[in-house]
Length: 193
Image: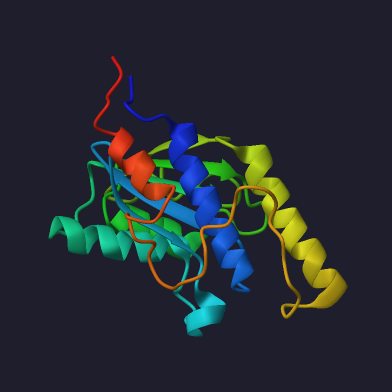
């Protein structure tokens, strides 16, 4: 049994997504985990950084590679609030990520199962184990609230993602010493059988 459940890791990704939404980015969050240790947590930063590659998945893969000292992330699990797009799924395949867990499907651009199946394509040199639906309702609701707020007032409105989702302001990959990340990271030491 995993020491920390998929739901708890996805909760961190949802919090990062909410933080991205507060900053005016589409609220998508990602967490990269290696052997029950957090390597990176990030939300989308495309709008903030004017970077077309500023997707949460790419940000955590970059940070994970830096922390592990290798681009090969085969023993890692990538948690994402929305099914990755082709760019992010390609990055996960190229990084040799071992497992992908995502909350909700993206019927317009999903590259894990919806539009493409890049993670399991036998023509590619690496395949991932894929789990979907973890905290799917919560992730879908977060995205729905964000896009509804855009239709009403645009990107400049004060957006409220809902209760318990705010991690504060700040930039970049979330530091592990910021609550609630520090508490969850510390709880990895209390492994369950």
